[in-house]
Length: 425
Image 1 (cartoon, rainbow, N blue to C red):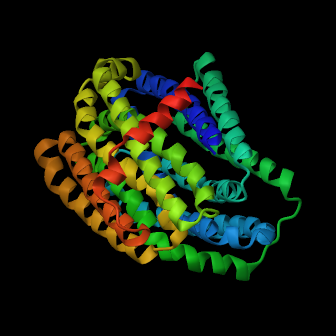
Image 2: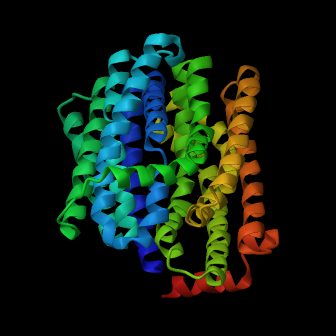
Image 3: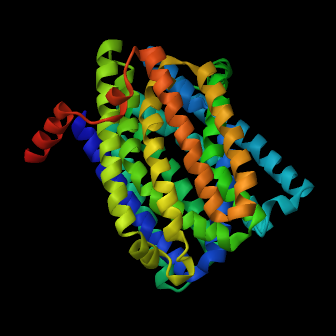
């Protein structure tokens, strides 16, 4: 298990390194304005994707371990849901732009259409990857991440070598990457499962379960991305570009909880409750410890990172990073614990808590952005994540058993010994 976590973390580091190379190219060639447009397009794309997914990954996590013989039906439902729901979301996005184009700021209409046209591909790919996780094909999951990262680098390098990189090309690259990722996921799926069964009844069973958690999924996305959309709408594409760079540097931290979370999705389904509590809280404490260490490093080198990734035009991003880092440490705790809550199916509680979070972040951004600009957005985000960690502590005590805050957040001597032993090996 720990080996798989380290492997996943290593691939995540590789992917992150490649992503930073791509960010350098985009920032240097397109500047803050172009970066802002790309960031806004990605945010709108992800919003429609989240709306259209109906949290089917949660349904897969919840149902698949109980019916492993029905994997072909899960695959068929993934394809059907991607095509049907993706098409529906595309129509919603198209109509929304026609009704209120000013909502989208300076986003070019043609690129906007391309980004929502690719959503069916994204939906199918995400479901396939969730299935790989839940059937224990974690090596295939990791190979996919490695190959996909290399492909992104080679594809972007091709356009750079021939001096073809532009705003339009940046969006074309994103679309091609999604198509390649789906093709690769399909390859790994078909290596293990030779048939795909299309069953409408099974699809509606998935939707019925997934939709219970959908408010929480949409809310989580809004809480993490609404700041960029509001900045683009209220302040413009340049400020959105600067803020996005700060967010991306800060989110280097999330490689730690994301790697732990990925492996725990499978582990949770086969672990008894008492052992689960011990393991997940230990993982949370160690995650927070490493998050703090990495935060210190990022803070010390923030000015250099901003200069390398964007240049002087993005210099304000370094101050945004300082404000975001505490919030990202807070965020790591609910990220690790999310694998448990999804498996337990406490969707009612998740929906309520996330709904409150969305209202909170919108109110904070609405009042803080006009007064303090992009700094206000950063403060709003950090305050919101502080609320989220308090909810996580409450959930632990309610659903896993009594646990003081120190048992959830503060690393202890035994945890340090485990880390030191692993380092020595």
